[in-house]
Length: 332
Image (cartoon, rainbow, N blue to C red):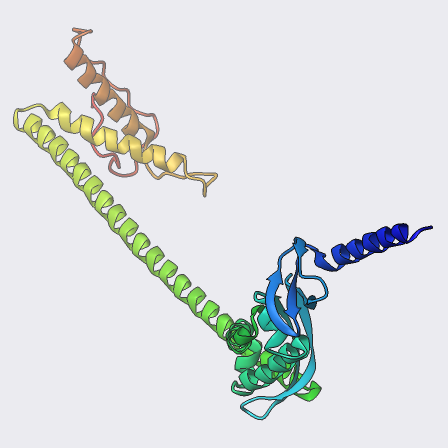
């Protein structure tokens, strides 16, 4: 192998080394810083990049994807001197690779300590009850404070979340007793309010029932009085008609009126439920005479039989006293 061949091979090797040193590939999600003689010059974006071989070199390889940082458990003293344990997680993203690489050393450790100190600061300024019931407020405060402090480092704190807040066991037991007492008190109040409302509703119902009953009795009394008034008017009209007939000389009208009442009275006595045997101290001829008088009235009114009414035969039973009927039978 001659000297020319060796020179060609050496040149090819030199070109390969130069290309290898000057061409750099940056994967997606990363940013590389370029240093020339130890000084930052530029940031390489993802893809194929060319630098000056043997003069420029890769400085920091920064991951610009969102990352999570686990904050370990730590003891916190609240404003009312209660000791609680809290742990959290922080999410951050590198926005400026040069600042993240050259403005702070050990970026993750810096973010971790910054988050821990601010957790103690924010939670220590709150009471225990406020601390346990306002977790979203604590997260917002932590995010704002930590993001503002990490802004010069070229990173963005996207989220800070408290994972757990654990008070001491005796404090948890006391809180459980307090909660139980509060719930029992609330239950008693609700039960008392329910009983009160039920009594009010029952009283309202009784009141409405009494009002409706009184109105019903009033309406019934009004109807009864109206019925009695109508009956009295009918009786008065009937009496007036009978009186007019008697005044006109028609004696049969009074006989018809008295015989009707007499017959109705006998029908009422005969249909009574409390008697099986009825003894009437009166003569049967009185009722027969009354019926005969009614028949005579009908004949005179309708004129079906021009002959005079037949005489009633007297009962063969001897009388021991005056006739007890309302009038004397005809034909005597």
